[in-house]
Image (cartoon, chains in turn cyan, brown):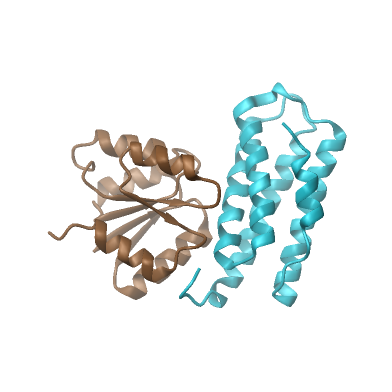
Length: 129
Length: 122
Protein backbone atom coordinates (compact mmCIF):
# COMPACT_ATOMS: atom_id res chain seq x y z
CA UNK A 1 0.00 0.00 0.00
CA UNK A 2 1.50 3.29 -1.06
CA UNK A 3 1.96 6.26 1.24
CA UNK A 4 1.86 4.17 4.42
CA UNK A 5 4.70 3.00 6.66
CA UNK A 6 3.91 -0.68 6.97
CA UNK A 7 6.79 -1.66 9.25
CA UNK A 8 4.77 -0.82 12.35
CA UNK A 9 2.21 -3.42 11.29
CA UNK A 10 4.66 -6.21 10.57
CA UNK A 11 4.30 -7.89 13.96
CA UNK A 12 0.53 -7.98 13.61
CA UNK A 13 0.87 -9.18 10.04
CA UNK A 14 3.08 -12.09 11.12
CA UNK A 15 0.77 -13.06 13.97
CA UNK A 16 -2.43 -13.02 11.94
CA UNK A 17 -0.76 -14.61 8.90
CA UNK A 18 0.31 -17.54 11.06
CA UNK A 19 -3.26 -17.92 12.32
CA UNK A 20 -4.51 -17.95 8.72
CA UNK A 21 -1.91 -20.58 7.81
CA UNK A 22 -3.04 -22.87 10.63
CA UNK A 23 -6.61 -22.61 9.35
CA UNK A 24 -5.33 -23.54 5.88
CA UNK A 25 -3.55 -26.53 7.38
CA UNK A 26 -6.69 -27.60 9.20
CA UNK A 27 -8.61 -27.28 5.96
CA UNK A 28 -6.11 -29.36 4.03
CA UNK A 29 -5.98 -32.05 6.70
CA UNK A 30 -9.74 -32.27 7.12
CA UNK A 31 -10.01 -33.42 3.51
CA UNK A 32 -8.83 -36.81 4.78
CA UNK A 33 -12.26 -37.17 6.41
CA UNK A 34 -15.21 -38.24 4.28
CA UNK A 35 -17.49 -36.35 4.15
CA UNK A 36 -15.30 -33.42 5.19
CA UNK A 37 -16.76 -30.89 7.63
CA UNK A 38 -17.94 -27.85 5.66
CA UNK A 39 -17.28 -25.38 8.47
CA UNK A 40 -13.55 -26.24 8.51
CA UNK A 41 -13.39 -25.80 4.74
CA UNK A 42 -15.21 -22.47 4.98
CA UNK A 43 -12.73 -21.33 7.62
CA UNK A 44 -9.86 -22.32 5.31
CA UNK A 45 -11.49 -20.40 2.44
CA UNK A 46 -11.79 -17.27 4.61
CA UNK A 47 -8.20 -17.77 5.80
CA UNK A 48 -6.91 -17.96 2.23
CA UNK A 49 -8.81 -14.80 1.36
CA UNK A 50 -7.50 -12.92 4.42
CA UNK A 51 -3.94 -14.07 3.89
CA UNK A 52 -4.05 -13.03 0.24
CA UNK A 53 -5.32 -9.55 1.10
CA UNK A 54 -2.81 -8.83 3.83
CA UNK A 55 0.13 -10.20 1.82
CA UNK A 56 -0.91 -7.95 -1.05
CA UNK A 57 -1.12 -4.97 1.30
CA UNK A 58 2.31 -5.66 2.78
CA UNK A 59 3.87 -6.15 -0.66
CA UNK A 60 4.51 -9.89 -0.47
CA UNK A 61 3.36 -10.80 -3.96
CA UNK A 62 4.47 -14.46 -4.03
CA UNK A 63 2.49 -15.16 -0.87
CA UNK A 64 -0.47 -13.19 -2.23
CA UNK A 65 -0.58 -15.34 -5.38
CA UNK A 66 -0.18 -18.58 -3.43
CA UNK A 67 -2.90 -17.52 -0.99
CA UNK A 68 -5.19 -16.67 -3.89
CA UNK A 69 -4.80 -20.29 -5.05
CA UNK A 70 -5.74 -21.57 -1.60
CA UNK A 71 -8.72 -19.22 -1.50
CA UNK A 72 -9.91 -20.46 -4.89
CA UNK A 73 -9.46 -24.15 -4.02
CA UNK A 74 -11.25 -23.95 -0.68
CA UNK A 75 -13.99 -21.75 -2.12
CA UNK A 76 -14.73 -24.43 -4.74
CA UNK A 77 -14.67 -27.17 -2.13
CA UNK A 78 -16.98 -25.17 0.12
CA UNK A 79 -19.44 -24.46 -2.70
CA UNK A 80 -19.32 -27.93 -4.26
CA UNK A 81 -19.32 -29.95 -1.04
CA UNK A 82 -17.94 -33.45 -1.15
CA UNK A 83 -18.62 -33.87 -4.87
CA UNK A 84 -14.95 -34.56 -5.39
CA UNK A 85 -13.02 -36.53 -2.79
CA UNK A 86 -9.42 -35.35 -2.95
CA UNK A 87 -6.87 -38.11 -3.28
CA UNK A 88 -4.07 -38.55 -0.72
CA UNK A 89 -1.66 -37.18 -3.34
CA UNK A 90 -3.76 -34.04 -3.79
CA UNK A 91 -3.99 -33.55 -0.03
CA UNK A 92 -0.22 -33.92 0.22
CA UNK A 93 0.21 -31.17 -2.38
CA UNK A 94 -2.01 -28.90 -0.28
CA UNK A 95 -0.19 -29.73 2.95
CA UNK A 96 3.17 -29.15 1.32
CA UNK A 97 1.97 -25.78 0.04
CA UNK A 98 0.93 -24.85 3.58
CA UNK A 99 4.40 -25.81 4.81
CA UNK A 100 5.92 -23.53 2.17
CA UNK A 101 3.71 -20.70 3.49
CA UNK A 102 5.10 -21.31 6.98
CA UNK A 103 8.66 -21.16 5.67
CA UNK A 104 7.95 -18.02 3.71
CA UNK A 105 6.51 -16.25 6.75
CA UNK A 106 9.53 -17.34 8.80
CA UNK A 107 11.83 -15.86 6.16
CA UNK A 108 9.84 -12.64 6.08
CA UNK A 109 10.22 -12.42 9.85
CA UNK A 110 13.95 -13.05 9.83
CA UNK A 111 15.09 -11.52 6.54
CA UNK A 112 12.14 -9.38 5.50
CA UNK A 113 12.03 -11.25 2.20
CA UNK A 114 9.85 -13.91 0.59
CA UNK A 115 11.12 -17.24 -0.68
CA UNK A 116 10.57 -18.57 -4.20
CA UNK A 117 7.08 -20.07 -4.34
CA UNK A 118 6.76 -20.63 -8.11
CA UNK A 119 6.93 -24.43 -7.95
CA UNK A 120 4.42 -24.50 -5.12
CA UNK A 121 2.04 -22.22 -7.00
CA UNK A 122 2.31 -24.42 -10.10
CA UNK A 123 1.63 -27.54 -8.04
CA UNK A 124 -1.58 -26.04 -6.65
CA UNK A 125 -2.68 -25.15 -10.18
CA UNK A 126 -2.78 -28.88 -10.97
CA UNK A 127 -5.57 -29.39 -8.41
CA UNK A 128 -8.87 -29.24 -10.19
CA UNK A 129 -11.46 -29.72 -7.47
CA UNK B 1 -17.31 11.59 11.23
CA UNK B 2 -18.00 8.11 12.42
CA UNK B 3 -16.85 5.08 10.44
CA UNK B 4 -17.71 1.43 11.02
CA UNK B 5 -15.13 -1.07 9.74
CA UNK B 6 -16.42 -4.60 9.23
CA UNK B 7 -13.67 -7.13 8.60
CA UNK B 8 -13.08 -10.54 10.16
CA UNK B 9 -9.31 -10.08 9.96
CA UNK B 10 -7.72 -8.42 12.99
CA UNK B 11 -4.85 -7.15 10.86
CA UNK B 12 -7.15 -5.05 8.67
CA UNK B 13 -9.39 -3.91 11.50
CA UNK B 14 -6.35 -2.66 13.40
CA UNK B 15 -4.65 -1.24 10.32
CA UNK B 16 -7.62 0.79 9.08
CA UNK B 17 -8.75 1.80 12.58
CA UNK B 18 -5.27 3.11 13.33
CA UNK B 19 -4.91 5.06 10.08
CA UNK B 20 -8.42 6.52 10.17
CA UNK B 21 -8.18 7.48 13.83
CA UNK B 22 -4.87 9.27 13.12
CA UNK B 23 -6.71 11.21 10.43
CA UNK B 24 -9.39 12.31 12.88
CA UNK B 25 -12.24 9.89 12.30
CA UNK B 26 -14.20 8.25 15.07
CA UNK B 27 -13.94 4.53 14.35
CA UNK B 28 -15.75 1.41 15.46
CA UNK B 29 -14.95 -2.10 14.29
CA UNK B 30 -16.85 -5.34 13.80
CA UNK B 31 -15.37 -8.81 13.32
CA UNK B 32 -18.23 -10.30 11.34
CA UNK B 33 -21.37 -9.36 9.46
CA UNK B 34 -23.76 -9.99 12.35
CA UNK B 35 -21.73 -7.74 14.65
CA UNK B 36 -21.54 -5.09 11.92
CA UNK B 37 -25.34 -4.86 11.72
CA UNK B 38 -25.71 -4.75 15.51
CA UNK B 39 -23.17 -1.93 15.83
CA UNK B 40 -24.64 0.00 12.89
CA UNK B 41 -28.05 -0.05 14.62
CA UNK B 42 -26.60 1.01 17.99
CA UNK B 43 -24.58 3.93 16.61
CA UNK B 44 -25.45 4.85 13.03
CA UNK B 45 -22.18 5.47 11.16
CA UNK B 46 -21.54 8.04 8.44
CA UNK B 47 -19.82 5.33 6.42
CA UNK B 48 -19.29 1.59 6.49
CA UNK B 49 -16.11 -0.06 5.19
CA UNK B 50 -17.27 -3.60 4.55
CA UNK B 51 -15.37 -6.77 3.79
CA UNK B 52 -17.28 -9.20 1.61
CA UNK B 53 -15.98 -12.55 2.77
CA UNK B 54 -16.70 -12.87 6.49
CA UNK B 55 -18.11 -15.50 8.84
CA UNK B 56 -21.62 -15.27 10.34
CA UNK B 57 -23.15 -12.92 7.75
CA UNK B 58 -21.05 -12.13 4.70
CA UNK B 59 -20.83 -8.71 3.08
CA UNK B 60 -23.62 -9.45 0.61
CA UNK B 61 -26.00 -10.40 3.40
CA UNK B 62 -25.06 -7.26 5.33
CA UNK B 63 -25.76 -5.10 2.27
CA UNK B 64 -29.13 -6.78 1.81
CA UNK B 65 -30.13 -6.18 5.41
CA UNK B 66 -28.92 -2.57 5.34
CA UNK B 67 -31.04 -1.87 2.28
CA UNK B 68 -34.10 -3.40 3.96
CA UNK B 69 -33.78 -1.24 7.07
CA UNK B 70 -35.21 2.31 6.74
CA UNK B 71 -32.82 3.57 9.45
CA UNK B 72 -29.73 2.12 7.82
CA UNK B 73 -30.38 2.10 4.09
CA UNK B 74 -28.91 5.55 3.47
CA UNK B 75 -25.52 4.77 5.02
CA UNK B 76 -22.92 4.75 2.24
CA UNK B 77 -20.93 1.53 2.03
CA UNK B 78 -17.49 1.03 0.53
CA UNK B 79 -16.65 -2.65 0.07
CA UNK B 80 -13.14 -3.99 0.47
CA UNK B 81 -11.86 -5.99 -2.43
CA UNK B 82 -8.63 -7.73 -3.24
CA UNK B 83 -7.05 -9.67 -6.10
CA UNK B 84 -9.58 -11.65 -8.13
CA UNK B 85 -12.74 -10.26 -6.61
CA UNK B 86 -14.11 -8.29 -9.54
CA UNK B 87 -17.35 -10.29 -9.71
CA UNK B 88 -17.88 -9.91 -5.96
CA UNK B 89 -17.49 -6.14 -6.28
CA UNK B 90 -20.03 -6.04 -9.11
CA UNK B 91 -22.50 -8.02 -7.01
CA UNK B 92 -21.89 -5.75 -4.02
CA UNK B 93 -22.66 -2.68 -6.13
CA UNK B 94 -25.91 -4.28 -7.29
CA UNK B 95 -26.79 -4.71 -3.63
CA UNK B 96 -26.14 -1.05 -2.86
CA UNK B 97 -22.42 -0.53 -2.22
CA UNK B 98 -21.40 2.86 -3.60
CA UNK B 99 -17.80 1.98 -4.45
CA UNK B 100 -14.97 -0.35 -3.56
CA UNK B 101 -11.57 -0.10 -1.93
CA UNK B 102 -8.80 -2.38 -3.11
CA UNK B 103 -7.00 -3.45 0.04
CA UNK B 104 -3.87 -4.47 -1.75
CA UNK B 105 -3.00 -1.61 -4.03
CA UNK B 106 -4.85 1.50 -2.95
CA UNK B 107 -2.81 4.12 -1.19
CA UNK B 108 -4.27 5.71 1.91
CA UNK B 109 -4.66 9.16 0.37
CA UNK B 110 -6.84 7.68 -2.38
CA UNK B 111 -8.88 5.88 0.26
CA UNK B 112 -9.46 9.18 2.05
CA UNK B 113 -10.54 10.80 -1.23
CA UNK B 114 -13.08 8.03 -1.75
CA UNK B 115 -14.35 8.40 1.78
CA UNK B 116 -14.80 12.16 1.46
CA UNK B 117 -16.52 11.68 -1.89
CA UNK B 118 -19.14 9.31 -0.52
CA UNK B 119 -19.82 10.86 2.88
CA UNK B 120 -22.44 13.46 2.28
CA UNK B 121 -22.16 16.68 4.30
CA UNK B 122 -24.93 17.01 6.93
